[in-house]
Length: 257
Length: 70
Image 1 (cartoon, each protein chain N blue to C red):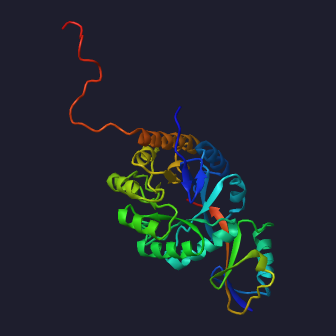
Image 2 (image 1 turned 90 degrees about the vertical axis):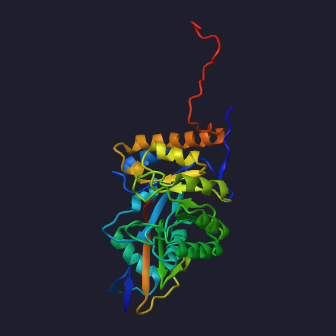
Image 3 (image 1 turned 45 degrees about the horizontal axis):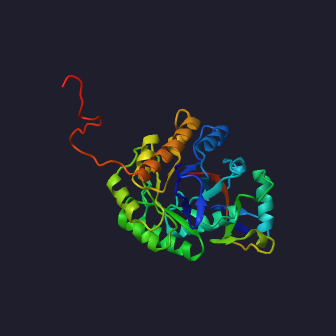
């Protein structure tokens, strides 16, 4: 029998290693079906000023039964991110936060100094902090030192679908991290998620790859299996790469020899 | 009294955070406070304190809600 190891964040066991975003789906029905097909336990949401021209009321009802992880997407300073996290805690009754502090609107790259500052403040305030960060091994170590419950290095740019831009770095981060590594952003298709898991990631967080697929529900299903396959392959241990052929069939008793 | 709600300057008759919420909730056509939160001058006001948190001229209030997100 195959026994999986258990994925935990801050001591809480999480059933699925796929975390999924709720934005950008064609409609609420597809969103609901895609979440179900993904089999994810954790789903992400954002916090925005309430206004008449944006509807969010039905979103939260649709997410009953999921563990909701609010984000601080779009924040550019530690100050705004901390306030957004505090508002999220009040709105949703959760002290978990996906911390995003963006340094540049064109690339949506994390601002590492603000991110570290916000992580420290939020950890001090009792939050379980999951920071979205660059794929820099030192940054991941520093965030864990600052008390982050997990680190979420980027696969590649948010929404880009470019996959895992720097597998060597991600492998290093996964090997050295004292907290779970959740690869966030850049996943384009199922094989990208598998690669992230094969590199040793504890989980994958994605949104656009599913929401903007031609068939989001089917892609959500593919992602569930991709993450499971990648994790199993990581645990199983891949064969070393070699530059020469190695016959897999026996070399003795060939017909005609 | 002039207050700033979500960055917009407005004349308001609301004397407490609760009053302001009731006005906003009617406009937004929502009944439950579930998924909403309010900050006054950069500090979150917990729901159980909305009734007794007075608003003052020039206050900056943020009213936020949960939206879809990644």
